[in-house]
Image (cartoon, rainbow, N blue to C red):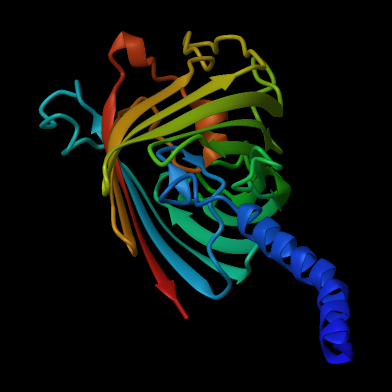
Length: 291
């Protein structure tokens, strides 16, 4: 009898710890980070909140054809103003990625970084993911042609900062909005400011396990006057497309009015009016390697 009493006492003493361990295990499962909101590190013209796991290398190629109404250009494919960027990024940590890219127009070299601030949880205790994206870009055009613009070396520099707030609502729908500031050390002061505040809205809706519809809208907040040629630099960026994704690849095909690829060039220098017919075709291809 004494033996049974001892066993019963031990059971009552151990029970609270078993219950606590079960609750702790349950909480850890519920509060796991939510699955990624997007397939790629970019949604057409803007970065997404996606951060790859440590020691992941991403290679990206981005191409913009000429305007589709350009004469004798086969819908812009033969367009003289086509633009291309090739870039790589590497995840130093799960929450820190750095990258480098080169762009045809303006011979841009961009050094970029992305930092995870908050991650959405499956329990909705943290309802959104917050990520900071930034870059430092150097204009590499010949100084002989642009002596007035590049009187100082610092005139070649521009910067971009963006806070990306994203939410995965369900397996099919993800949305984000992203306030940003673009800065050029040198601009035409007769109608522009060195800084421009903007906001972007983006979304992805999956129509099959590998295919999604993409929307990307970028709205300048700071207004600029028209230049001496009456070009308007205040048009929003509007992009519509589809994405085909696998575990290691993402291919985005879209139409947009942005010819630039480096974000601050799009936000500051765009004169194409989507609703006025200034539309071009573009694509983004990414490949991810895990080490």
